[in-house]
Image 1: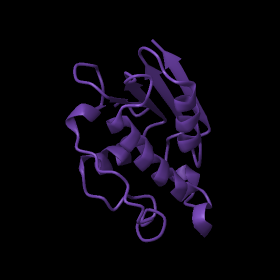
Image 2 (image 1 turned 180 degrees about the vertical axis):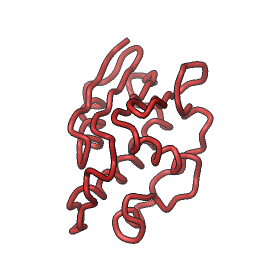
Image 3 (image 1 turned 60 degrees about the vertical axis):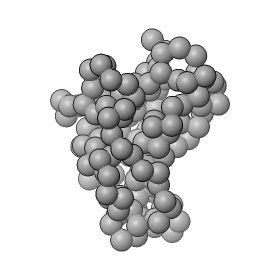
Length: 142
């Protein structure tokens, strides 16, 4: 991580700051404590919680993945879901008083993928991550 860009990859051997294939990521359980009790911090204690802190300290998140049969791999889907819920802390979601957006550096996300990617997956990721401090979500095919 260089402070500007944090690279999250879904397979071993790719240069990255965090390799999703080596992390155990739990699914969001919908407790909403990231909005109420621990604003901006996920209560789930797994390897991805600390990674999210690093992501929020970077200006750009790059997610590198290889779609499986045109869909988002499960480990990437879990990471996007958890990050999406954290970004809700910077919006008025659920009547929540938003955290100040200047308390994090993250402003853009680039999804870099190999192979085929179903169009609906692009709109799902865009909808999940373009919120709060993130105003730019881009997709690049390699």
